[in-house]
Length: 103
Image (cartoon, rainbow, N blue to C red; front, side, top):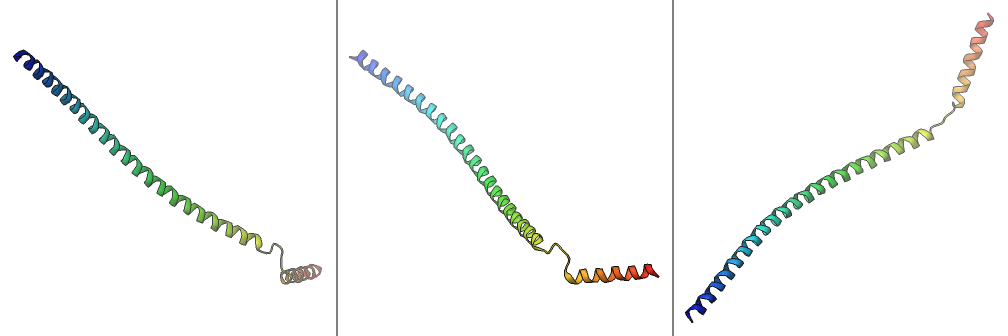
């Protein structure tokens, strides 16, 4: 009976050693996963910051585009020809020049 008891104790000690080894391996794996999670969190934070910067850039570019469109519309709505008053002034000036040439 003493031998049976010793074998049981040995089996229990072997199981304890095996479980202890397994627990240490799981602790090591858990630490590695915790580091990986932290790295992913940092990447996510950096990605979020970059996304915010890009949204700000897009917003500024949209504002610049809107302003440029307004300026183009204003330029296209300006009269392209000369006004009647300007034409009359030019005709008078031409007539004056012709009179001066005749003298």
